Image (cartoon, rainbow, N blue to C red):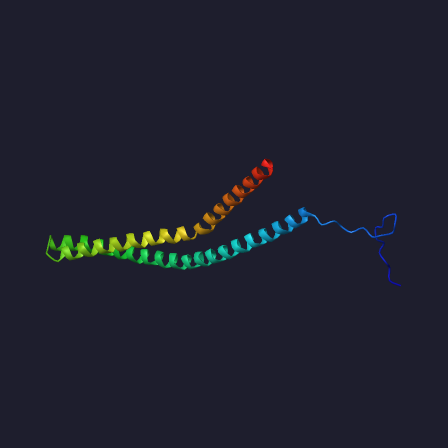
Length: 151
């Protein structure tokens, strides 16, 4: 036989109805706002993690390029020293000097690109957006408290 749950009754037998509460409505609104906030943050974090993963691939490629250019620069400088010793200032040496300068520029560009990829991996947009949201939330809360205190 199914059991019937007892209801709270008053002296006249009428069931008590739960009065609508403004606090519950505000808590529900707060819950929905927090859910939307974290959904937006999760979407931003997901996008930045994708960017960081892409930056990792580019960083490895830049590291490889810097390694190849560094080895090339070392070999060129060694060849330059060898040619200087063999030819004692022949005219084609200046071509090797120019090549060494170009390889040095390439190494510096690869290092700068590597540093940019490291910056992308620090997730700068997520940190900035999170800070802005926290400042905005704190300002709204202060404004609401001040408005309630004034009333």
